[in-house]
Length: 256
Ligand code: OOG
Ligand code: MG
Image (cartoon, rainbow, N blue to C red):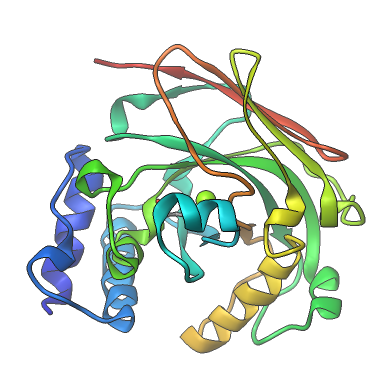
């Protein structure tokens, strides 16, 4: 597997919003190689001036695993260029076939340097917020293998984070509602995310230890979607509310 060439392919696809064939269609590759491709693609973003602001977990709920036919937890990087402002319009022109999903986002307050237990995780957190992730697979028809999606930085494309809160107590089973133009499109519970989205921090700490990196204080961690993702079109008002945490929203603009 030529790591650099595969990284160039997923990176260009994201940059130009043009879908590509799955990397695995021509050459099978391992999960380890997939993370190497992901790392090399993030390095290309860094060289263009983007910086990483956090990480995201994927397939932390059954709903997502079933929707995408993949059953392993995955992780990828979030960069500053992916961050959209709460309440602001999002231009869909930079995406291929964007989807949105309801999540919660954590903000860390101490460096995470190694594996944490569930009990320890809370003391590493500054705040939690309702959030939505905009995912956009770089592969045609949004179809991929586990290795393909990891290499593609787990479809990461955008995130919108609502107001921060310190209400960590209610996360085990808080109602989640995503609406398009006031109509319910996804309904669920934060409990669908690993039983409790706080476990995302435990997983993140293990991943960090395995990858031999440090997650600095002030890192964002997206816990993964509580429900299946929903396709985005232009001219929508999209809102997600998480019971006890409040809500987050954006509108979509189609730039043809
Ligand atoms: C991969 C990303 C999964 C989540 O929250 O489960 C993910 C995808 O579905 O394209 O972000
Ligand atoms: Mg997600």
